[in-house]
Image (cartoon, rainbow, N blue to C red; front, side, top):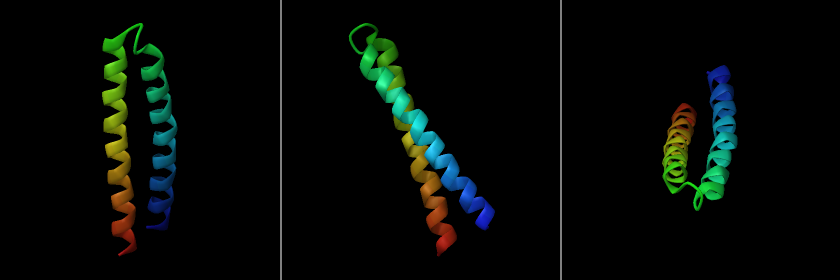
Length: 63
């Protein structure tokens, strides 16, 4: 289980790095291409939800 916890922590951090980039690009594109900006914003929301679920998995491992 320790290996899985380590992997989950790694995956969460890796996802956060990507999510920040999606949000940066969404902001850059909001005037030039609002449709793509909105898609990136929605993608970042879904990735954040995935991160929350992975965090929940870690919490459940600790119980």
